[in-house]
Length: 230
Image (cartoon, rainbow, N blue to C red; front, side, top):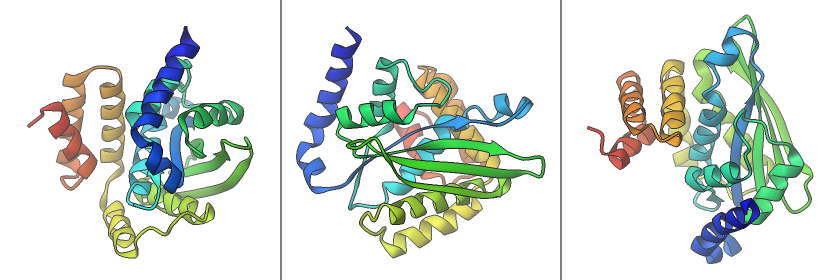
């Protein structure tokens, strides 16, 4: 039964974009593993999905590629009972990516150190070969978290030799990322988790709190409009 439901999810994804998929490179960003230690492991847990969503958002600026949306990714992970802790092994990621028609699967893990440094280890799995085709290890202060995510997204785009991100748009995203405080990133990540779990009221409140910290956050603005928030 589960395999049939997974196939149905895949069919929906593929049917909606078969022509686009043939002409553009396809990318999916899976949840990141949480390797934070002690109390921080629980505090930073929302980042497992938050990092994936934020990085996908940065890559979506590139009109030369197609990035799988969070709704369809969540459906696929749910059907396979995966992604609860943000960890999906390479073989499984490749399997899901291949069924969904996504060639490049981005995932990894994050960890912090006592000095307030965030480390993002990222790998890209080719769903056609199950091999890691690109990897990078990047770090910055937690306060520069969004800028770090943007930097990694751009490195991945270049490392995979995908079509270039329009320079003007890329520069604008980098400048905006530098201004987004980590408190807003964490609130947004919690909002995503609430929305994905079906807690619409909680999600709206968290999106509001995100915008209170960073009024220019477009993803939160769109989420509020989608959920009927004010």
